[in-house]
Length: 159
Length: 159
DNA sequence: CATAAATATTTCAAATTTGAATTATTTAAG
DNA sequence: CTTAAATAATTCAAATTTGAAATATTTATG
Image 1: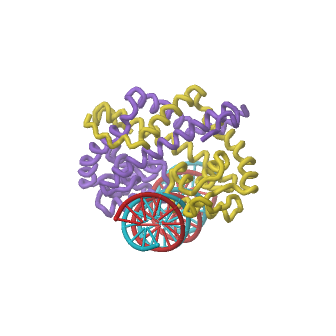
Image 2: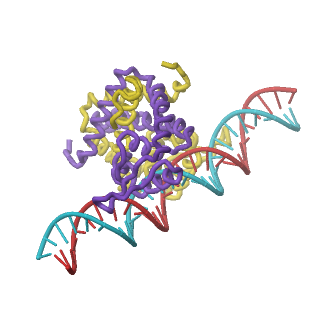
């Protein structure tokens, strides 16, 4: 995208970064998605399984926040995982509005079976960058993501 | 995501980077999307307009490649932009299979009217990173994206 | 205790996205 | 020239995603 010196230095820098960030994330996502499909899961299903596998049972809303998807969608995702017998819903004793989702034995087994392989796949894809570069990219992406989440764009500082 | 030392150092590094990259891109995208909606456009519509505005007329297929969306989808996007009178289809003289899409006068006008503002919005959102950090993030994301596009994950180097 | 506000999930309709099949055209090979 | 393969765009059905409205429950206020 030839945007050099078109909108001022700051804007050009930001636009250039955003295009590259979006391209990298989309392309990386398409590759990992192929891998995930080969396990018979969709991307959001895998994401939920990963969350639950690593962090244990949590409410639907928590899954939404972590996976950055809408509530309506997560309900369907959990529905489908439940149909496959991979997760189950538990009504929380303390607050009956919240529904805890947790892996079933089958879900645990699948998680263990595929996540190791997926991790190696991700490592292979990422290996076009050195580990040092990966750390640096991660650090900057984290800083950007966290800052945005905590409401920074409201700071309308007019340059 | 607590994945530290779970899948080996390389895999942990890669997984950690990928999570952060995906989060940053999603969050940034959600913010820019709100801005784009305020112009009465969808994200892919805006992307196509941006491509055409900056680079001039091009075939549908070229738009697909640049925006990383499927062909069927881009046909619909161009249909809708055409309905709004923002772009027009031209049958190429040399190859009548290809259909060139170009901005109409109205499309040009809209592009000029909104892109400047959008550029400033992106700059404001990105300003949680210094310009130096933005350049570095862009450089690494570009390297990652380009390497992946050119078929690197086929290199099955088993560590 | 009763009411109002807030929170968690689900349901539903609309919009988006993909991938496969189809149509039209061009290029290559015999 | 004719046929086969390749390419460009479109159409279509299925799956995904979102956001708004509905339901159920809890918390706060009087």
